Every structure is written in structure tokens, then in C-alpha cells.
Length: 394
Image 1 (cartoon, one colour):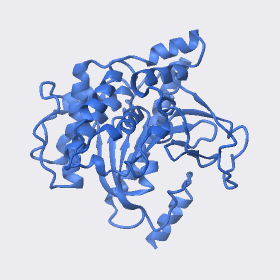
Image 2 (tube, rainbow, N blue to C red):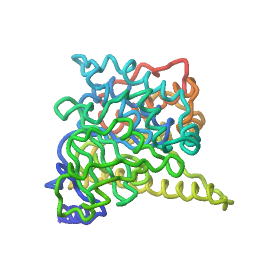
Image 3 (cartoon, rainbow, N blue to C red):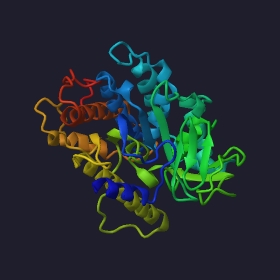
Image 4 (cartoon, rainbow, N blue to C red):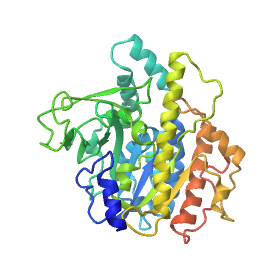
């Protein structure tokens, strides 16, 4: 009975499965990693998690990496450079720092949000165009979605945006890009910088990102109610976190083991919220973001608690606001809450981060990922020797 109920819950949800994610008897074996939004703060925090996952040999075993917003910047670089990671016999990528960590840190040393807004308002082109140009010049250098690894070469990378027209998730990946209400475009040659910019188009200032589509390339789909003009000619996209700030959906529906790295923010109470339209709009968006994050996290944690059934999952969650003492590991790396909370309070922006803050964020992502893995995924994982950047601490 539980399976029937679970199936009904899934098939009547306000989302639909896209091939090859359709519901059968339940999720398949395999491990997926989700990288949340949160601007440069999350982008750099996730680097620490990747370093620890790599040390344990788990990075190479991943079947899918699903990301939104700031997490998509990190994921985009990881996907582009996957073939250059040089995995050794222990499944450890010996080139991770050079190929992934250092380029992402270079990006984190540049402010691109406010300059893009100003240029988009004063010069030709849109704000999103300026963000695309910045990402491409620093990280992607003309690469497209077709430069990501195939399913036989590495994990499938799914960069998620939100379709403002349909209100549904828009997936970018190498095999296809799709919105289940609109249709699917196979083997898209969309610039990787464009996909990342759409995924990280924080509203209201960096949104929307407009993507011109080829209506002749979309696959026929009579079941998609919006499979028609103008939806198949142009997609108006915004930050993937508007729909799913953990990047959870495209991974949770498919795989049994789910790892989530959450570098997102947290809305604080405000007894006198601004009434001026711009600041008030931002406050409303913060409320929406907070609710989406809470609902997705609740879904994940509840699935971890279930012992069986199609809604049950194994895995681990770690967040930038997690208290490491809650994992109750006597040998966890020393991460005082007062210090980690300061890192969690860094603004959600694409604003230059000091090198010292970058190293602290990487250390914190590394430490809390380690604690989550050893507590909830595999108690046999050896304790790390120390932080990636020992002199920085957290």
C-alpha cells in the first residue's frame, strides 16, 4: 500500500518526470550530489565539499550532479574540466585544485553583479548578457553544454533554472534541455556560460535571462500543454533557486543516495520591513526563497528517515548554517559556531570575496561535509588530517 500511495503522491505532484526519469518501481542505485544556490558564498563553500568528496574517492562515483544558482558556477567548471581531473587508482583526482578550485577562486575574486546591472542599464545588451560575458571570459571560454562529459565519461551535470513563462523547472544538460510543460531539445549547443547565467540569474536585478530557441529542434510532445509558440521560440529564465534552491528535484527523483551541499542563506526576522518598492520586493523574494528551501530540505530529511518505499532515500545533508557539534563526532574538525555563523552571513552576491574568506569558506565546507559523510553515509571513512588551508582556520 505504501508504494501505491507514494506513486500517487509523485505522479500527482506539480511536476512531471522527463525521460529517462520516469517513475517505475522506485529510484535506481547510484549517488547524486546537489549543489545549492547562495551566490559566491555557496560557490566557494561547495569547493570544500568537493575536496573532501574527492579525498574519499566518492567524487568519481557520482552518477549525477544537480545544481542551481551559485552552485551551478562550481558545477559548470567541474563538468567542463572533468576529463582533466586525472583520477588515480584510488579514484582521487590529482588535478582538482588546479583545474577546479583555483579557477573558481579566481571568479570569486571579481565583482560582477553590480557592474553587470549598471552596464545593462546604461549600455547595449541586458544585465544577463553582461553576466554571461563575465562567466565566459573567466571560466568557460566559449564552451557549450556539449563540452560536458557524456554519461559514459562521468556524472551527468544538470544545471537548473526556472522558466518564468511556465513556472516550471528548466533543465540544462548535455543530452537535452527541457521544461516538462514545453518540451525537450536534444543535444543543445547552448553556451555553458549562458546556462550558468540563467541558473544564477538572481531576481530582481540579474533576472531574466532570455534564451532564443529553435522551434524546429524541439521533439514532438502532445502531452506538453505549452508545446507551442511562443514557448518553443524563446525561454524567459530566472534563478533556479526560485523553484528549487537545493537543486534537489532532478537528483532525488532518480537516485537512491542523495548528497546535498547547502550554502544558501537564511531569512532573518524584520520587525519593520521596508515599504519602498525595491527593498520590499527583495524582502518578499527572501520570504519565497526561505519557504522553498525549507520545503525541499524537509522533503529530503523525511526521505532519509523512511526505512523503505519509493520515497525512501539514503545519503547526507550538510549546510553552511549547520552546527558541526550536532553530528556528535568526537573527532570532527574544530569549527566553532561563532566563526561558521559569520561565514554563513556573507551576502548572497556575486561580489569579490577576500582570499582569507575564500579559504575559510572552503575549510568550513570541507569540515562539515566530512562530518556529514562519516556520520550518515559511511562510518568507515578515515578522519581527515586537517583543513585544506590550515593557516586560515574557519
